[in-house]
Amino acid sequence: MIKLPKIKLMDFTDPSESFLLAVILAAAGGFLDGYTYIGRGNVFANTQTGNLILLGVNMARGRLAASISYIVPVTAFLLGTYITEKIRIRYGGLKHLGWRQIVVALEALVLILISFMPHYSDNVANAMVSFACAMQFDAFRTMNGVPFSSTLSMTNMRGAIEYMTNYREDCDTEKISRSFEYLITVLVFTLSVFIGSRLTYRYDDSAVLFPASMLLFGALLMFFKKRDKTAPA
Image (cartoon, rainbow, N blue to C red):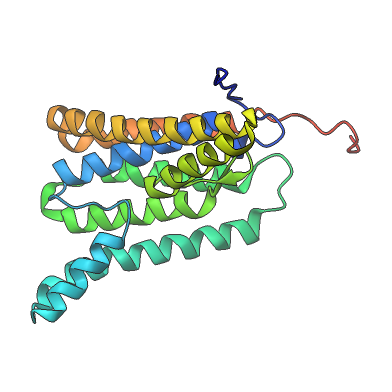
C-alpha cells in the first residue's frame, strides 16, 4: 500500500532549490509558452529544440530568409546562458543577495519590457523571451537536490517515472515523494500553458506581466534563508 507522500514545500537552507520555488518557475515557464504561441506569432520561445528543427528544415528547403527567424531566438538563448554564467561568476560570493535572485529579477525586468512591445516587433519580443528563459533554465537546475527543469517538462517526466519505478523495487517513501514532486511540476507547467493562453486572449501583450510578477515573488522568496549560526556576525 502506497503511503501518502510527504512533500517539503520550502527549504530554508537553500530556498533556490526548494519545491515551492520550482513550482513558481514551472508556472512562469508554462505561461510564457502559452503567451508566445497565442500572442507572439505561434512560436514556442521557451525552448529551442523546435527552432533548431525548423531551422534545419528551412535550410534544406532553401528558405534562407525564413531560417534567419529561427536563428535569432537560438542566438538569444545562447546569449542568455552566457549572461547568466557571468552573473554567477561575478556575484556568486555575495553575502546577503543570491546571484539567482539577480537572475530572476533581471528576467522579470525583461518580461516587463516585452509587455510594452507592439506586435510588429514580435520577432524581437520572442528573442527576448528566449533570452529570459535561458537565464531561468541555466540558473535553476535542481529541486531539493535532484535534477529539475522549469522550461523542459521531459526532464521532470523522466524523473517522475524513474523514481516511481525505483520505489516499486525497494518501497522507499522518499522516492515516491520525489516522483510526486516531479509530477506536480509537470501538471503546473501544463496548467500554466492553459492559463497563459487564456489570459493572453484577454489581456494581449500585457499578459506577460503575470509571469513577471511570479518571478519577482520568487526572488523575494529566496530571501527567506536560514541564517548560519556558526558564521561570524
